[in-house]
Each structure stands twice: as C-alpha cells, then as structure tokens.
Image (cartoon, rainbow, N blue to C red; front, side):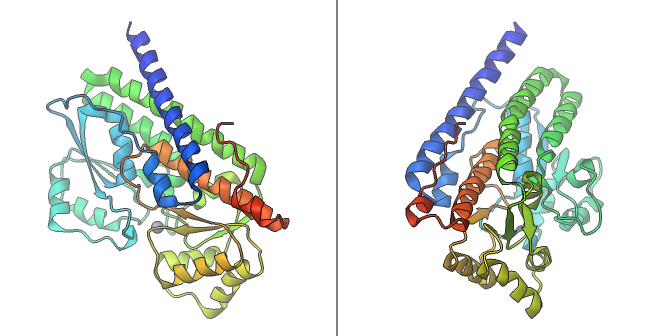
Length: 339
Ligand SMILES: [Zn+2]
C-alpha cells in the first residue's frame, strides 16, 4: 500500500511539473522574450498540508538551497533563507543582528562556502550544536579561487538533495517515508534538467559564448559551450576594474562577432553591464539573464529548466545570426519544448 501511495504521489507531482513546464512553454511562445514574465509563470508550491509541530529548523544562506530543503522536507521542516532578494547583488551582502538571531535558533545550516558567503564563517564561529552543511565541501569544491556559483553545477542539487534526505531521515525517522518520497520526486524532475543539458550538448557543444560574470559557467561547461573572456568576467564579479586592454579584448568578442550569445547577471545592472548589453544588442548578439538568487514561488528544477530554455532560444538565434538568416526567422525561432 505504501508503495502504491508513493507511486501515485510521484506520478501526480510529475504530472504537475510536466504541466507547469508545458504551460510555461506555451506562454513563452506567445509572449516572446520578456524574462520577468517568464519567471512568474512557472512557480508552484508543492505542499499545502497543515504544518506539523516540532519541525526540524533549517536556515539556508541562499534561497535556492532553502527551496531545495523545503522540497525534500515538506511540512515536517521549517526553512528560512537569508539571501532571498532577486534584485540585490549577493556578493555585496552584509549581515544584520537579525541574521545572527535567525541562525542561533536553527538546528541545521546550509551555506554555499567557496568564499561566496564568507560572512557565514564569521557567524558560525560563535555558534555551537549546529549541524552545518557547507555545499562546496560536500561537492569537494572548497578550493581557493574556485568559481563560487556551484549551484549551477548539474550534480550539486541532486547530491545535496540526497544528503538532506539522509540527514532528515536520521534526525526525524518518524517521517522517513515522506522524505524519501520527496527525494524520488525531486530526482525524477531533475532528470528533465539532465536531459535538457544533454540535448543542448548534442546540438551546441563548442559554440563560443561569453558572459558579464561567471554565474552560469558550470552549466555552460556541462553543455560544452566555449566560454570566452573569463579574466574579464572575474574582474566584474569581484567588483574590480578590468585593464583597458582586457576591456577592449572583451568588447571585440561582441563587436567582431566572435561569440554567439552573451549571458549577464540579471542582479547586477551597473554601468559596465548596461554598456555591454547595449553593445551586444547593437551587434544582434542574443542575451540571456541569469539569476544569482532564485525568484520566489518556483521549484528548483523548474528554475534550472527555465534558464536552460532561455539559453536554447538564444543559441538558436545566435546561430541563425551567424549564418545570416533573415530577421523574420530570428524573431521567432522554431522550437518545440516538449521534445
Ligand atoms: Zn556571483
């Protein structure tokens, strides 16, 4: 009977997810490239049942890890996320007294590590009896000068999902079945992310692209795209000034059509980024905005697929641009999302 319930739950959730993605694709086709509207279409919270007492209490430094914990823990856990504003630059985050209080009341802490949220190391020094998950350490990526945007590495979220499931089962065995069911749902949805990455790789491996910052680079590496202008991207990420030579080399990528697509950090729209976007536009190079922080009301896998879908559209447009396709074709690329 338990297995039957588990099967039905997985089936229903999968259907909801597929429908959500389907709806999203239909809307996308009719709405064009309005990124903000796209991101609002997909969200769906999975759990609406009443909350159980004595829940495990979790604080995530970043909201995509908090959302993952919610998807695995369901109503048996209490999650709050510290960085959750999709309109602010997380690299410039500063702690407040309420941040320390929030952490003090938690049982489990999840944070990125890899120097992305160094403020967390400071807070944790004064805390005891906390279970701390440093995601970079979990992924064996806690090395100096590593690209900190490790949540876009395709195996990070599934690995953390499994880790959290085992932890929740250990700490709250009473709800073990539910945690395991939620993991199965998450992994089934995540297969769609992995399938999308493989499909893009089969079509677009070795295409040259660039970015204003190295936010999506683990994902573009997985697709096999050739990322250009890395030294410049790191300067922008660290809020440091690129040398004139570095800047002119970077702008040549766009002006001389050496790349087919530009990724930009949708949360950092300073003068330099705006300038680069304008130059890309002038040269008809498609752009894709990538979030550092997750927008509200969306599941982790849907969020990742959204951004991969946007990448797919832009790559198609970039390739059509390269072979000199007429403007009409560029405006509405022929894409079937339900392949
Ligand atoms: Zn960043």
